[in-house]
Length: 419
Image 1 (cartoon, rainbow, N blue to C red):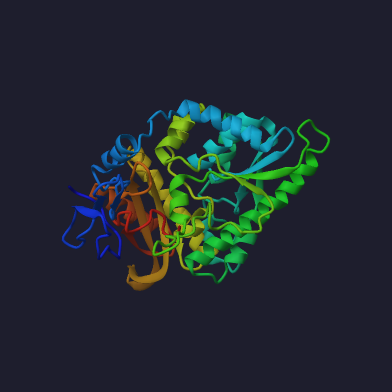
Image 2: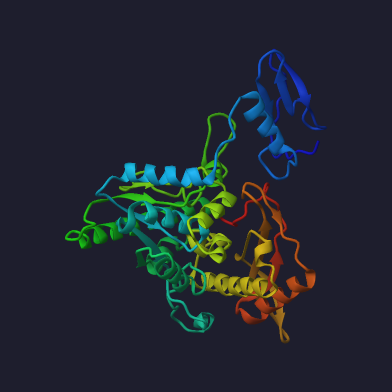
């Protein structure tokens, strides 16, 4: 049987009372079972798509051996979650929530709207001005303040949440604050912590303002809760257990939050996988185009820059990403992949423009296919399309010398470059 293993350690001795039921050339005890008790152990990943019969293994254990009943349905979950939210929040408290335009935060926001109505306030951090000519700013001595959202992202999110879903939306300007705090920072984990702390600083400031505005209205009440669209894979990658199991990385929705955050956290999607969230969104009446939209991280393009986050690199990443996504959509293959984006490597490579040697940034294109985002495979592009995408990016985005395509699976890689 094919199974996926990515551990750097292995079991070297069989525990007393156990027998071997699976082995590989490198792991003598890849699967073990107790001789008389219903106790089993595996050192591979039955939960990943890379293990073709992994779901069957988990079902056999959960249902046939443990006696669990497979009676979970989405309709019941939605109603139970609405009741749970109302009980948790109460009749007076207000909730603010972070939205990025991705499906996770949008579904979480729509659920909260259904549960408590206008006592929920979505907050979008607009990380800067948006301009189709923003790359030309490099030629001047002063940078335009550029943030870490995709091109036209703010306008699209506002239209979706306010016009189509009826959600109260506040747009908070955070461009200078984010870029100022990230200046000189290159280590990915430190960047994630700074991004998480900065978001919370902005949200708590907005919470005070919104609370004051609602004082003399029917929605008056303290803002005590903070909504996030955290999913189950985010939690798994952010958890650290005692013993040899290590934290893979702190996720921007989990490990990036400061411990002394004043608002209490509410995460209604924390037990769901991405495919379940999409179905959740459909049942809440969210349009199919939005339900199938590729994920976009809350911290934005900042986690798609390897190295220091600067206005120049953000603008390059934004422009390259816009070309990449638009060409994918024009080719009619956007929905064939689960996530796609362009990242920037802050190291520079040599190139040729005209008769001169130049040094420019390296663009890394990333596109994957996955069901649950726990594992992923690189999307297999038509090579001619990939060449056309590369040519456009190098020709149209100033400061770029090379364009590469990342074919790393997850695991061992992650889907995002810096998250």
